[in-house]
Image (cartoon, rainbow, N blue to C red; front, side, top):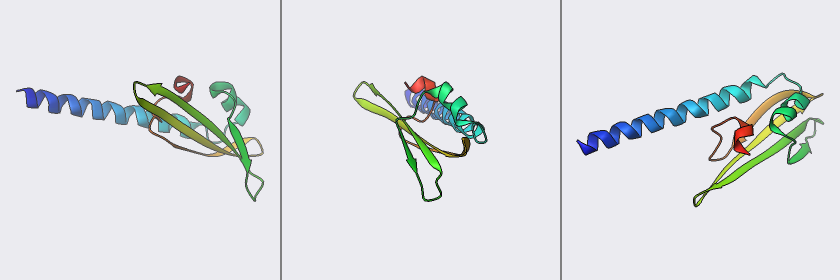
Length: 103
């Protein structure tokens, strides 16, 4: 009985975590084609910017918070050409919610 309950609970947690990550992915991908200044108004100013050999700018946003003994982190990389977002990528163990919630 306890084993079935534990398995069921694990499945529910896994599904909800996937759904939350999928919402994050959808939200981030919806910004492609938007103005970087509007993006910055929603999530804040970048922590860093870099330019590549094509003179495109990548804005880097670092979000982290301590939860118990685990550092939760999400770094977002936004490639921009002429103020328009071309591509968004991310890495970290906490890229699951909208960036403003990560602060």
